Amino acid sequence: AEADSSAVPTSICLSPQPAGSKSGDESSSSAPPFVAGKTLVDGKVIEAYTATDGTKKREEGMQVDTMADVLGCCSLGGSNDGTDTDDNAETCQALQPVVIGQSPQFSTEQSLEVLGAAREAWNGGSGEWPQMSLKSRIEAIEHFVRELSKQREAIVTVLMWEIGKNRKDAEAEFDRTVVFIREVIAAIRMPDAAEYNDEWQHVGSTRAFVRRAAIGIIMCLGPYNYPLNETYATLIPALLMGNVAIMKIPTIGGLVHSLTMDAFAKTLPHGTINFISGSGRATMPPLMETGMIDGLAFIGGSKAADDLIQTHPQPHRLKVFLQLEAKNPAIFLPDLFATSEEAALDHVINEAVSGGLSYNGQRCTALKIMFAPKGSDAGLVAKRIAEKVESMHVGLPWQKFGDNNKSYSQITPLPNLKRVAYMKKLIDDATSKGAKIMNKNGGAIVGGSESTLMVPAVLYPVTSDMDLYKEEQFGPIVPVAEYDSMETVLEYAREGIYGQQASIFTAKGDGSSLLIDRFANVFGKININGSCGRSPDSLPFSGRRSSAMGVMSITEALREFSVPTIVSYKEGNVANSVIRSIEKESSFMETLV
Image (cartoon, rainbow, N blue to C red; front, side, top):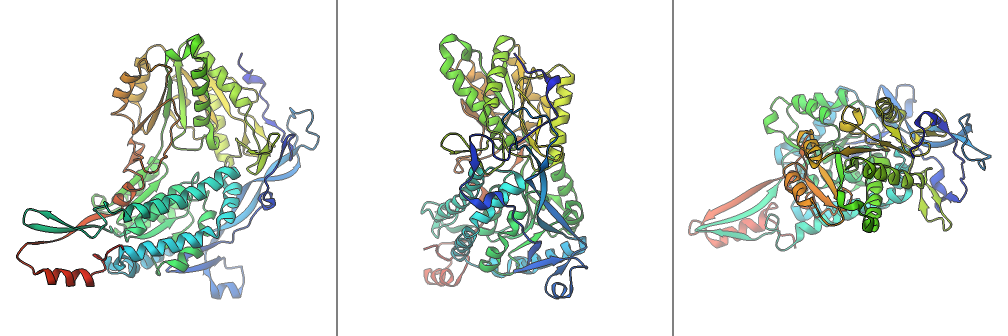
């Protein structure tokens, strides 16, 4: 039976040390960090300050009108007056935000100055970085990775505090980023990588040297949920290809980038990468309006992407790479509900919960809606998912659970109260139209009115008149919808505005072929008995409609931010000795070995 949604408390308590849990082994995890406001422009890491900060700083740093405090999610405060549902929680405390850093708010004029530094570094393709050989750029990025690795623990701690990522996932984000960079470099160095090696091709009487070259100045905007990994999956390939980058630090999740600035400054030429922070409206459109931005790497919302692209005076020549929203469906096929298929059903329920709620559902690749056959089968799916959700550990990013203290919190705080309010809006709309909250305390806030730690809500039945049916929740809500026939599912895919991924859950494959054939022209990836995801990074990560423009992978990202450039000649027109001399003196044609 479903939980009584009307009885769900507004707030429940969190013990600072729940029974069966303990803080992570790293004692510094539960102590809030502090990252000072700074930026990187023209190869220099510059401390930012306001007019009231003192003469010494005024001489050495960059003055900004405003320095915004960055709040961490997870400080234990005073007593919580919420309803305590744990009879053993005698020391229940409230969760309150705490200042963990500062972010300088650039003015339009300062942003244009950053563009000036980037233009000087690019210099029409004649700057130091774009003129450097591919081999030398690779060596510089490898040096950067070594320097970045020294900041691993600091970055992991900030990921936990600023965006509520548990320690295991924060460590995985950093490590996966490093692995991604190394695999991109390895792909360039592969002997059969024709676009990067130094082999001449023979096409009839023409001999051609083909290698990819830079586009120009790339504006790079990354997301808050994977601020390091997702951003670097575009930034590093763009840099390797010889582009110059301007990175707009996200309002949430931006502190990790402050921790990378010294590594960039130490390893790359002046102006190769420059940082801007502050209001997106005050900083990004003015840069686009100059027409000096050659490429856009944007991971975020489609409306913001459209608005930004339209400000470019010549949008036809703007190279655009976008990773945007998604509403990835999971379809439970009828063959799962035979009595003999209990093991198969249990497996896909686990996949659905993991796919829907990994990192609180704050992934573009999360499963955003579950479809199951109408009636008792759909009810069973909702009930089983609710049972799994009720067993999940809800807590702080560094807390461990279980007898062996090996499991970190599976549900952690959302980044701000705005996200909590949006979750509440979706839940309230769905329940007002007939959906029920299936799990105990679903949608409740843990730790008081200032907390952003939310118990996931499993909602059933979700119908087409509810906002949650079509809107991307990007948070800890699991909607379960019913279908009378497969046409309901096909119509949902066909008429939707997104087209990233879908998951098909089946025991014997009955009906799967029809879905695959129809979905092949709608989604970028179709998963069978598995949740959606980007990995492995060697495979193309694509999407259709309002979900993506461009392809991300180890090799595809390099192509997104470069242009194949050819040096050719007709046999008999140029002596071999002349070609060898050109090859020897050219940085563009320099061998990778």
